[in-house]
Length: 440
Image 1: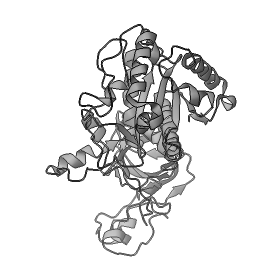
Image 2: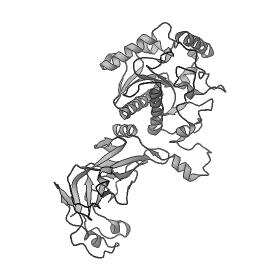
Image 3: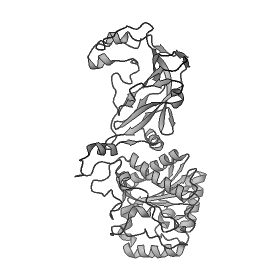
Image 4: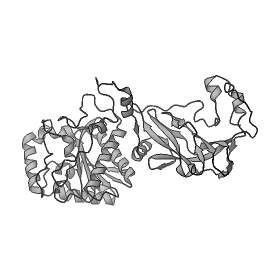
């Protein structure tokens, strides 16, 4: 997670070094933004370092900006700076790619819908980026800017974020101050003022094109309108003639950084391993074999007959031989608690599939709000008997966010995910037959 502090005195050595470099740049008499010095000198900046691999950096930066949004609710002039110490950011193109990924990540973790009266098309002159109820302006500054000196704030990618509305505050001097800053940019940089810089609300202004400037005059737009709309509530009066496409736009697969953020925030209950973008399922301590002499015919409306298909449940097993052509049920090693609005797809591992082992035969969907222990159905279609042991990784869960992106409560189904029910409870749920007890 990113470390948030109010001043550099309580930061770790990396953050202290980055802040010192930032201070030297901002305090240069020629630095264009004259409004940057006061909050730095007063220790009012909200500072963070996002470090680790790409997913960890996105999660850390997202968490820091969520904290900043909360601060802005109390202090509209609050400014946040996130230093991104992430491997692979080796040039401007890589930095620009991370900036795009960060904005997409913010759309995925946004706890609030995009305001209904705010434009989502970045070609609208009044567009700005909304996150957690705040209309933001972002400045992405890179150590790989070699001529646009005003966008180089130190040795790592630096994200400066603040509420867009503060730019028009009475004490900012309006057009006069903006003109002075643009003149100072021309003097400070080794390249002419970028063509994307404009005045908010003017017909030719495109706010998003100012977020990431290159060393040349090219326009580098970080997001399209469709990407911005991809995880939002429909605007009031918006056409919904193609309901299928609308639902499709509102279903978003969660990347690893978003999943990590949900775990850290307590939205998603998971103590197991996060492998790239998926939750890794391992075999738990409970296995349910099929009965060696199962009934030849079973009435699926009778729960007692269904129960007779199973052998004795093994708890605390050390090894289990899954023979050719046989099926067995296994509990996952970790419980999983999804919020309402987040569901999952269970998929097998390719290594297992190449041995002829199938996982979750025909039920890959985990309902949103699921809370409990998943049961994995394993069938051996390979040429050999295989020995399975507790803790072996066998499957993964890819998470998706559905609907308008709102997060609700978890639910506890009386069968699904329950510790005591590992076998099928088909008749008990759909035909009301008494549960005789499949967990023997």
